[in-house]
Length: 361
Image (cartoon, rainbow, N blue to C red; front, side):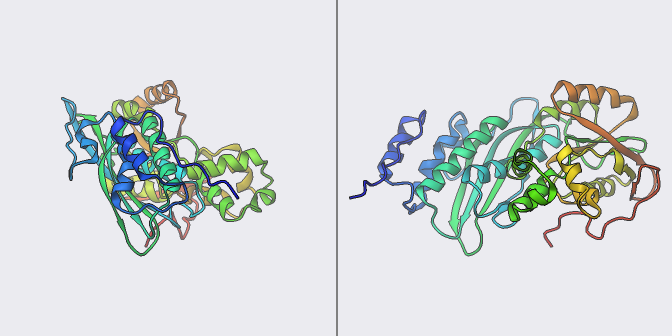
């Protein structure tokens, strides 16, 4: 007779009450979870270190910002089939759910504090899936410096949806807005763009790696950019010190830059030749019609676009480098009615794409 798989033990380090609750479940990884109490037992350890969560035993959480700070709030849900794929690992799904919210907090010059999470399942999750999801959340919140404060679960028709509301803190009156870009500011972008969109394309069609001439390691790196974005939290202090305005890039450089210009009531100019791309992304772009345009409209970059006064540009570059984040000057803010101009290497305007970036509608 085939030996049944061992029953899962509570995670190491869980408080005694959590460990006892998990042990009481007496479930194997493939067993479905029945009832919210089972899900809460797996998530409760994620509140450790945040007393205002009350161990998930209350209906609400208590949020007390440190003296001299203000609260910055962000909510950005992710859904299966839109932001992640059904076959993605639960750990990666959890990481991305928290990371996409953290990216917005970082762009405001803030630091994450704690988050509320609502989980909507089409079917009851298995014990093993939920345990891995909680493990991914623990890794993400440890990396980003926040804790679970509370939330809710439900079951409804439709894809799996994870809705996170993240609270961050920023020194009083120091939040970096997207409405305050000024004429003559330089436009900077962090990191490199387009890799996440290529990673998604590879997940949908693995054969593209051979078509694009990508070694396995480079293909894996592009896929990781899609599944595990890295919020630019180390850049937050530099943004507070040097930037006039900033926002995170989630829907593509053209679309999001246009949003910043509209919010600030200014115009802007980007030189495509100066936009930073990785070596792998450049090679792929060479295989595609309008390849570089595709890279800046794909979205899911989770980098930071910042407007910085010319006199502060050198300081911003140096502070970013000290924080371990590369930033690139790609253009300028100009006076006048809102308009974004994209230029080639000779300064000639390029036609704007019909699809400037991702749009749910």
